[in-house]
Amino acid sequence: MTLASCDTLVVNANDPEQAAALKASVVGPAASQPEIRLGYAPAGRGTLDAIHGELATPSGDRESSTPEIVVNETVAERDTLSAIMEEAQPSRDLRESPTPEASPLEIFEMLTFVVRGSEAQRMSNDASRQRFVEEHLLQRLPVASMADIDRVEVTPWTAPGALVVRIWCRVRR
Image 1: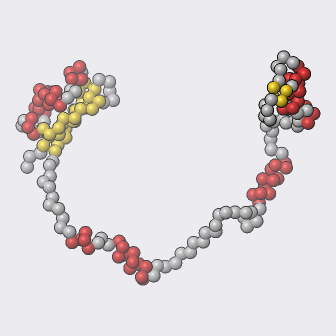
Image 2: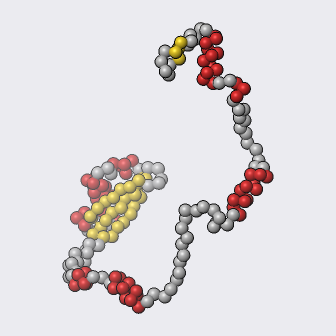
Image 3: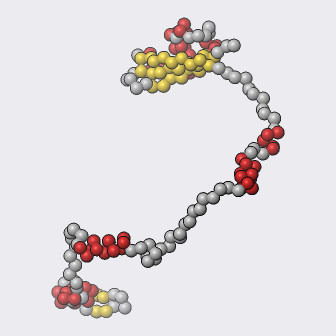
């Protein structure tokens, strides 16, 4: 065995004496190693007594980083109540600002239809939906023409091959 540097040990792997010397220098003598066995077993009386003793110790005896918190309830004084009321009121800027003019309301009646069949799958864009409504549903709607239809929505339904068609019809006053 030759020492090449302070941390390097050169060993001839074919020489059994050098391999045994290396093992002894790295591992140490076999008699000095403790035998460790691991296993699972029910907790013994000593363990349970230690746990019980730790739980039974009053909290004042244990080291604790938790501060003590004390809460007292009292009646709020007049100045406290007036400060709360003052904070709760909207500011003068909000009260004095004029309200914006209301925009005219648009009112729609929405009708829902369930459509099944091969033709239902062709409603992929807005133009084909409008054409479908005009050909198949216009006579059922509360409007006179397609100009009163604002929107046609199509969504898949839970039944296979079925679609839900929602038509927004503008309500005239």
